[in-house]
Figure 1 (tube, rainbow, N blue to C red):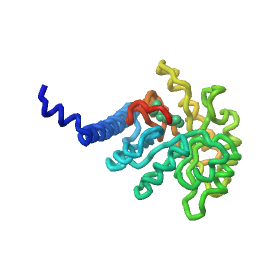
Figure 2 (cartoon, protein in one colour):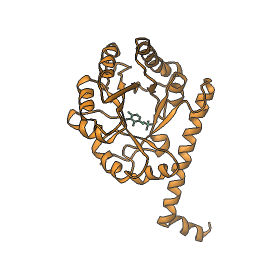
Figure 3 (cartoon, protein in one colour):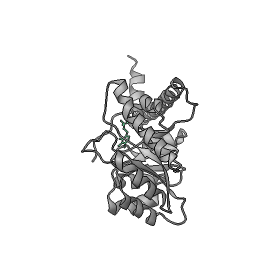
Figure 4 (cartoon, rainbow, N blue to C red):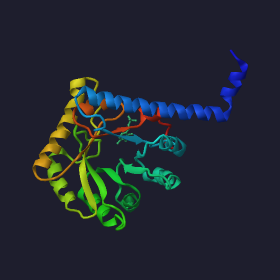
Length: 249
Ligand SMILES: *Cc1c(COP(=O)(O)O)cnc(C)c1O
């Protein structure tokens, strides 16, 4: 072993550099996996957007990806997200809120985010619309659907989506973009695709009724290809880019 190299590699500055290049490398790998999945099912390259899920990750990691040209980030916890949003206020980052929403947090979400993927009841949507600042573009909204019918998960029941979607579409400061789901984890590839197909069918049904939904927010690190095969337009990827999440402090 070359001692000089060992010393170099253990210096703080250099380990920082290694961490950064790992992040960029993983980002590129995820982009490549998305392109491959698009190609495999005959979808045009670039039809799926990548949302990097940066919850529990430090702002330095986000800044590194911004420097690499990635601008869409998803956060689940408002209080963790706000300092990161402030630190990166001079960049073009678009923030997506993807976590459960308490009604006392809607004003801050309406002010600081471009997208909210996790709207599952009308009262929350009404508050977001009322509180979206007038000088900003309408807030992009996805309705979170509890597609696997799990009692522990948030999301509107599939039977109630139609009514909620038509009500949300009427709200002046929101722009209803589509549907989001976090299906139960499945290892069988056929089973894995089924809930994604159901979400796509719900979107088609709503569009037949005159809504104009262009977004299916579905697919995470473990099921990205299955989601893309069923029509995902935005995949939400955390672990595959950032590695395992440190525990929330
Ligand atoms: C954490 C999270 C993700 C990312 O999950 P990974 O498995 O780390 O890719 C995606 N969507 C939501 C709503 C999340 O909470």
